[in-house]
Image (tube, rainbow, N blue to C red):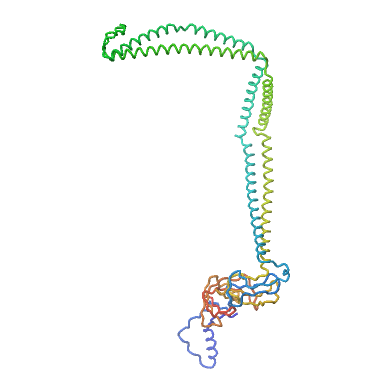
Length: 505
């Protein structure tokens, strides 16, 4: 490594003066004292010029070159096909491009299907986790003190309600097996008495007087009509007008109208009273007769004995209610013995939780299996793509062809570098001779000045991009590699040129 530093000139001059002083008289020292010389902290190193990115490209399989599509210096795009070969090992099974595309499409579909399987498995896992939460909550709810108290109260209410239902059903059964015949006979007797009373009441209602009143009112209406008509004619002599109620001398039109109206209303009211009286009598008798008929039907029904179907249904109903009561009483006793917690429900809830947890474990395993299938499908897709790419050589990134060693017809081996691609859009300088003492003075982002040996008149600038973390033993020195990104360039720059790098303070 070449590092340049300024030495103390004062020390050198002093040595020379001392050597000369032995040949002559001592010189009178100058009153002026020379200033001390400070050593420069600037570090200068040698480096080499590299493109910002480069790669050696090789085929994935062996075979003979069938086509070369680029030459040195050509500009290429990322993933561009630059050469093809016939793979000797797979030449017999080489298929058309469409078939290869179909294989890749099938592999891609397999990846999508596997990913859908993961999504489905994850949904199942979410459902299983929800079921575990719900099962745990069911146990918590059963053990809650408030819920236990409510359960005890509800059990007592259920027992009381069933007991009441049994009492009612037993009474109904008793009515069917041993009806109270005297009760039904009394009902008939009461209905007969009611009918007799109705008939007597009807006979007591005399409408003859109402009919006499109606005939009188109708006579008065005829007289009032004659008076009304006479008044319309100007109160002429009216031989037909009877002299009743002193109306024969009526000379006022308004009085004549009122006389007619009052007579008409009286006739209508009396007729209405007659109609209502007749209808009421009929309804009273009809209702009394209906009650008697119903009482007789009921009495005759029970005289025949109980209905076998109804009796059987009633007995079955009583038996079912008694069984329910026994179960309710047993449940209530269990609750009381377990402080309001139903042991059967608790056991069922615990079994539910165990099943949910087991299902969750199984579903999680299914998720892991589905994810493994995705990984396998992706690997198969990569393998399928590599199999297709084995007869094509593609560029890994955009840049220029720096080296091209392919010839049509020649045989190449898999993995053998044949083409070098480089990105010359930006340049870097790498220096590997900075010692451990010097490298500590360098920082990432520090500005540098670069001069190429081949282009001494070109002044370049750059910044420190990175400092190697690992050392290299170089001719007995511990050195570190530093990479500088150039911020300026010249069209005459070439890969591998040597450079002098000055690290600024």
